[in-house]
Length: 248
Image (cartoon, rainbow, N blue to C red; front, side, top):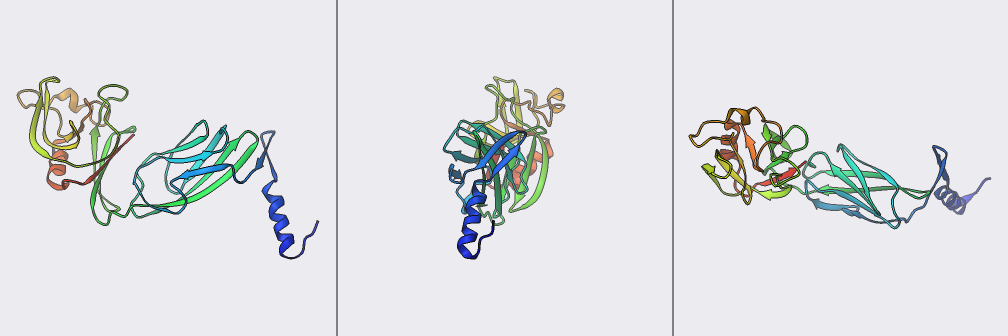
């Protein structure tokens, strides 16, 4: 069938919008308008450097896939919401493109939107990655300044390290916690009683060998452990108020 002129072009688009897609024996129909909201909204700016990306649909979602330019991550479905959890932090002052495929019953919709992250200029900030290999990464703007092996808290209980966005606080040269029979040197406060600090010491100030061997794994009571030379570097170089992002 042929169509002429602009009205013909419109008809072709209308037909294309309801074309059925055959996938593994099932029929899915493109149905524009089934998406209620995206978080962040298309064209948003000043988005935090770590946050989940959420797409809300009108109906219960059966399955979905989400891809973001240059960002690995995991997609999960919760009722009518599709949630993408980034594997890493987003870079500052950068546009990211999101493409998602949402399946609700026999309907499918492709969703595309973009957002831009906050501009930090040349400020220093820290990523604490507690996924598999625990690491602390220090940035200045978009540039990586230092990468350090670390140990965060043990997940799933009272010793789990809090996740979120914090600011580097006060600091000190040493501390000791009688409850755990351990202390540390060159600590910088991340949040409440959770510090970045050196390898654990016993009451006499000696490094505890078995704790040193756990570096890179989840091993602490919630603080972030570093090698002594790395703890000293953070203590000396990371200004108070610097952003700290903790994620897994």
